[in-house]
Image 1 (cartoon, rainbow, N blue to C red):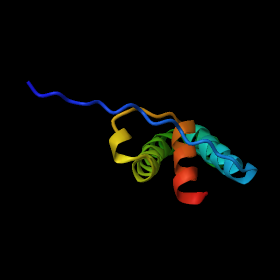
Image 2 (cartoon, rainbow, N blue to C red):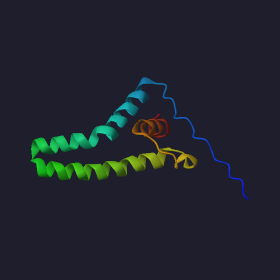
Image 3 (tube, rainbow, N blue to C red):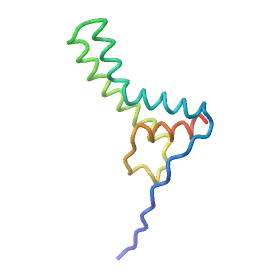
Image 4 (cartoon, one colour):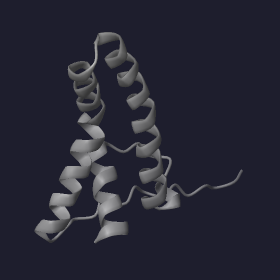
Amino acid sequence: MDDFVIELKEETPVLKTKKCRLIALVLQLFLTYGIYVFGLVSWYMYDAVIAFFTLILSFVVMGIVRSKLRNSSIPLKQIEFTYSDEEIAKWYTAKEIC
C-alpha cells in the first residue's frame, strides 16, 4: 500500500500596503458583482431580453476570468482546493501586482 502525503492548504497571503489591499478589494468586487452591473447597465440602455442574455454571457465570461486569475496565481499544489473571490483576489494581487 502506498502512503500518500496530503499537502495542507497554504494560508492566503496577507497584503501589507493600503494600495495592495485596495487593488484586491476592487478585484474582489469586480469578480463578485461584475455580472450584475453588466446586466443592469444593459437593462438600462436596452431592454430586458438583451439584459438577460448579457447577464448569461457575462456569467460565462466572468467564470473564465475567475479561472484564469485562479490558475495563474495559486500554487500548483493548492489548485484542488476551492477558493472564494476574496481569496482569488488576494492571491492574484500578492503574486502578480504587489
